[in-house]
Image (cartoon, rainbow, N blue to C red; front, side, top):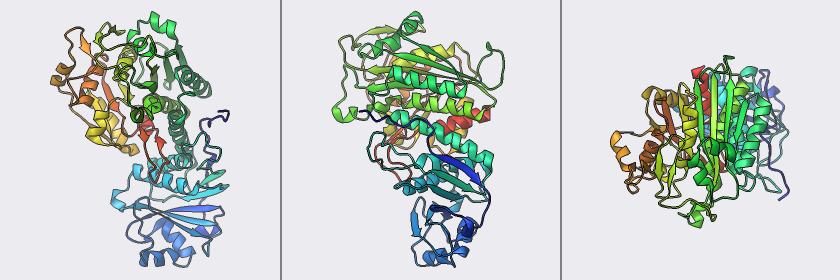
Length: 500
């Protein structure tokens, strides 16, 4: 394989353009948004007037309904200078939010990116607030890029220039940075596991730190051993790829280096998960390059926070391993001692992510952040509970969880809190060690995994996010080709913005 996969932040030129009547816009394609209930007002009404009532006639004939993410293409419509008009539906007006707008813009961009286009114009609604506009711009950036990093003939082609007509230039710039962060996370997840492994992920992080001004530490195997990260090292033993722990720091408040961060992001970075000696079947293993999606989203989020120059002090930490079956692989019945001193009896080597995070959380705990958020593709049980589109929230501090949930609502990314009653912690007690790495059977598996992690955060306000469902799309959706989604990058950026 010699073709280099795409670098980060390559969605072409995205910029604001002066307000203009639809008849004056020159582009290969023009995107206009439509809610249910007729042409109404705004951009769709302006386009309808310019085309002599074309949209109203189509709506009257039932050809144009504005249903959510429905697209209707009209080629060389009379009255416009564009080669193609694309009308994308938003659904019922009272149900439109930032998430709907993000996905609608992504749907339009994906629809148009099926062939090369040098200039595409989006006509946002004047009624949209600034956060909605930012999410629309981010969605347009994300929609034009697919998962086809290695195809000789990609299914999606990035636009040469994307214009947002009449939009605030600063909001467009911020939306572009947010889209870049999501696309960075998607690219890392979509890359081959032979390209993204612990060392190369750390190299990617170093390159991003150099571009954005982030401070970075990379702990190699020797440093991990000196730091007593024996849980992370145990998981890594079965692979020929040595592990890494990456610490990134952003100082947006320009305070003294010894001050505690306002916010910490922690990501699970299992760059490939075979299941170890508790070997996965082939069909379950096929998608396991995505088991580092938490780390990818954490990196995308802190890179975006730095690009936006938010007034917050933040750290990001990711533990990077491969979980393989080599001759030194950790075994069922092994007892490993985590950095915190807690002993862990291994009952299933495929419950490895929590073992890795045990050490990473303890490292971050030592930095004493005001709040800590971890992201992990941790359990299939969370997908059983919440499906493929919603992430689970688990917390030791309701205010911390509420802040993240509010940020997720602002960005339009679905999350749902699950209980963390003390009784669930009883299920991970071990007769041999302090704790074991799985609960009692399949029931409440996402909660018992969270209770395991809770052991390593101490009194730090902490929220765990199980992103096993929404981190990776197994099949295409209107707004994405499939593959890595960059889930929660946008929400973490909103949390940092609210914290600052």
